[in-house]
Every structure is written in structure tokens, then in C-alpha cells.
Length: 361
Image (tube, rainbow, N blue to C red; front, side, top):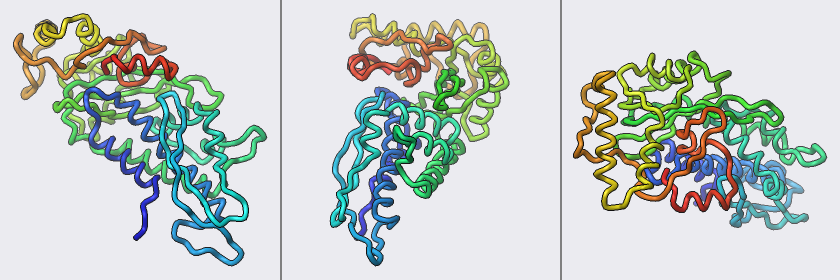
């Protein structure tokens, strides 16, 4: 009976996350970053092991003069901005020289390399050169063979293509959130606009819908971004939450003309909720939701047929149940929607753990 490699398990977990989303208490982007980081690291260390064994694949017999064989895995850990990420480090027995993963040592002191690669992977895909440039030691020596890099990049590129083309018709989108943040996607490059869209579905689960690089946060970039979502089967949402960037606002009005546009509704209600006593929160939030939407209907008309109609006594949308809300803004626009999804300014692990202990998502 053949055992499944940890990289195969990591890929399956990533696919389940993209297909099923996360519950309302979980940060969807943090979950995605952790899953993708684990997959990339597993691919790399397993490739490093294959290089050490002369390129032999799993369950492939040793050739003449070859020594060493795979000997299971030991638990390892990489510390990144999103926290500690557990990986399975491959082991080798019967070799003339002990196998030590150089990549694990390199990543311990260069976690920002992983953060950049993971963001770029799902924003526009990775090339072989991207991976090669990222994993060189202080002398410029490549830490993994070019042939192995090529194999890994091909698999990661397939993952990216599946992500940007996946069918969205099964996600019953109710509340859409969109924003642009600026990230350095190249090692020494200027920051680029990263367009982000995520949603809360009718069942209360969060889904990351799309990431894309925009040359600038213009109406044309956002319009093309939104039309890509509709072409992949996404239903028009009940509400679209955004900041006040003119290009984004115009694109929302053009593409989602039957949806209600809201400015940072998610964090506005979360901030209100954090100041309310437990026994009064549900009733007050229901009233706020109903009053706010009725005012917007007066100006824009009701949403499309079949959308939930809020009333004063209705249950509020699936907002976080308790805690306090961070008031951080994304670096470029001032909108807090990106912070709610997991994007925005980086914080230290200790600060992040304190925030996550009580902060709603």
C-alpha cells in the first residue's frame, strides 16, 4: 500500500478551502495564505529530498551506485507573518552523507520570501524565474535544482489557473466586499495594486472569490475584475461594500446596478457591536441593518426579486458575535474591508495573536 505524500494532502486541503470557504469566525485570507504556504513549502522540501536521492521519485528503485532511501517525515515549523505553519520534513536513511534540509534553515530567516510568493501566486501566477530568484542563498547559489523548480512551478501554475477559472455559480453570494491594497509583488519592485473580492454567502460562510493585479485602481480595471466574476457564474450580490475610490464606485454602479452599494458596512456594524452589551446586541443590530437598508432603498429602490428583505425584527446578517474590532485601515485607500478579509498592514505575531483573541472577522 502506497502512502500519500504530504504535498498531495496539502493540495487537497487547499482545494477544499477554496470550494467550501470558511465559517464566519475565521479569516478567509489568513486561512488561504496558510494553506498555500504549507503547499509551497511541502513541494520544495520534497523536491529537495528528490534531488538528494539523485532525482529518484517515490517508490522508484535505486540505480547502480545509488544509496539512501526515503524514511518518512518529521514535524517541522515555519514562522511567517500569519503565524507558525506546520510542515512535514522528509527524512532519508542509508545515505553516505546525512540529509539535512537546507531550505528549512533558509526559510526560518527569510519568511518574507514565502509571503511574497504566496501573494503573487494567487494574484498572477508564478514563473520558474520567480521561484529561482526567491530561493538562493547568500552566495547566490540555487538551493534546489532547476529541473525540480520547473516541475514545482508547473504544478503551482496549474493551481493558479484553476483558481482564476473556477466556477462561482455554487456560491450563493449575498454580501460582496471589495478593495485594493498595494503590495510589493516583486523582490525589488514598486508596490502594485492588488484587487481583492470576497463575500459572505447566504449560509454565513466566507469565500475568497478573486485576486488580480491592477495597473492602477481605475474604473476600467475594476470593471474588468467584476465582469470576470460574473462570467464565472457569480450571482449579483444583495450589497457591495467598498471604500469611496471613484473608479471602484463607478465600476460597482456599472456592473452591479441592481445591488445596494455600502461604504464599509461590515466594519461599521462590527464597531457598533463591540460597544453593545450582549443582551441588547441582536436587537440593535437588526434595527441598524433595517434602517440603513430602508434609507438606501428610498434612493435606489429595493434589491432584485428573491433577495432577503430586512425588517426591524429580522435577524442581522452573520456579523461576528463578540469582541472588539481593529480600526486599522489599508495603506492606500483608508477602507477597512481589506483588513477584515486579512489584507492590509502587517502586524507582529504577538500583536496579531492579541487582536485575534477578541477581534471579530
